[in-house]
Amino acid sequence: MALTIGLTGGIASGKSTVSRMLKEYGIPVVDADVIAREVVNVGEEAYRQIVEVFGNDILQENGEIDRAKLGSIVFNNEEKRKQLNAIVHPAVRKTMMAQRESYIQSGAKTVVLDIPLLFESNLTHLVDKVIVVYVDEAIQLERLMKRNGLSKTDATARIRSQMPLIEKKVYADAVIDNNGAVDETREQLLYILKQWNVL
Ligand code: ADP
Image (tube, rainbow, N blue to C red; front, side, top):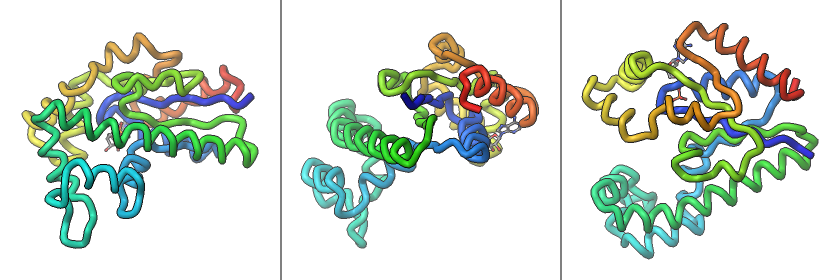
């Protein structure tokens, strides 16, 4: 039986950093964010459904979905957000499962699903174990402002829109504390992978 690990955390907590390390060790990582962009590409089933619900107004001149426009429509409208999620979420789940299956068919004993909103979207049933990449809020804020060039107000708003990391920690099978240097993060990851007989 292959092991499926969910990798999660908060915005700028260090998920991509850990994901890169996993790939270095030859462990395949399925990235929910990448898939969420792909499933709404022109010609995909989710694209067709979104246009059906939201109309041609949300399209750019080249026919692609105007993500910013769609984002602003659903941002302040709970009903529309639910409609969009009802289209996009199943498509993302389906593609994630297909990619996972394909890695397993190719011989992978472990597959990681990198899902930023694993808890918020109630997707823990898709994985056997969960790793949460944790940082204190002050460091999260600092790294987010630096990486995305955001003001303190904007960065704080983005952090506050997610489930607090301290709460996610409680639901984790393993926590990586990413407050320190990247090398320390790598050591913790290696420890977990050895404990779970992945490496
Ligand atoms: P996420 O994928 O969770 O949004 P990233 O892995 O992109 O987070 O990390 C957020 C930012 O913080 C990036 O700019 C990254 O280079 C930096 N970063 C991540 N981990 C560390 C660390 N241990 N020390 C210093 N900077 C870090």
